[in-house]
Length: 402
Ligand SMILES: Cc1ncc(COP(=O)(O)O)c(C=O)c1O
Image (cartoon, rainbow, N blue to C red; front, top):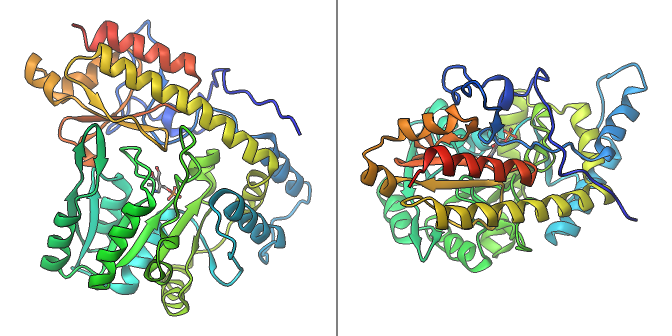
């Protein structure tokens, strides 16, 4: 079947409850553009593309019945996840038993940490890190034990020696793994994940693998689910997925987890379902069924082509036009993480000044410091390519002026 999707029209999301647009100019968010510049939202991790019609159809189809009663899991929901995981990730054994619902990825991260470690203990995390991880670990009374990733030949890597030192020093029992990695856009290879898992096996560490970005793969890169790399990985990984990033459904909180080990599964479910009353959201189930379909798959493939083009354009422009600024070529996600240290040292500008110059001209990138990037900003490029080109043009003319 041939589909036609629109990844070129500019969506006007003003006044439609999107934080990416409506929160600009409020405390903690990018400043509002100066007069004469329109907003290019490049901060919150959401899409500036309309999701596929199959999602609208699935939700409106359900809404024709004028009730949203207490409900049992629709059969099509498990079938849709099982189809998606097998066709996209080669994982063919998803069942009702090993599948769990999560109203958001972070609730499951919190429950998994609580299942194996006591408050006050450390949780290992690679930095730069998604702000949601560091705050959830803090908020539930644990310590973030940060292992900075390193850059070699223009690519980000985990530092296994540093991770091992920290596991030993802090008696780590749980690690949060971001696969693929937000904010640096790295897709981990099977060998890299296996080496990490071997380390976790040596010390009995649980791997909490957040795979919410795993559908957004660039340049034909294949996602490797962490639980597939070894026997240890299968029984000591909590794999978390969702439709929030893939289809811009964050407002429905429709994440899910796959846990193979029955003991671990029971412990985590006891925490998340029986103590904090994590419950499914019926519309989120229907939206997922609409997305995890032939049309949804074709839509994601096309979006990934657009995002690959955007990433390449940004990478090349940064390399050629923004002296003293660096970002890795990403292999996944629609996020790129820029290091401005050299630029700031050379010009004497602070990161606050760089960010203000971007925001003044409507390029609403996000401060990278809360992600643990001292000289960094994060850019979301899930926009029509024409908008990304316009953002780069403004940055060249007004921000990184030679
Ligand atoms: C790595 C990562 N995990 C989780 C989330 C949020 O997921 P949810 O809204 O389902 O909690 C995000 C959002 O940006 C993310 O980047």
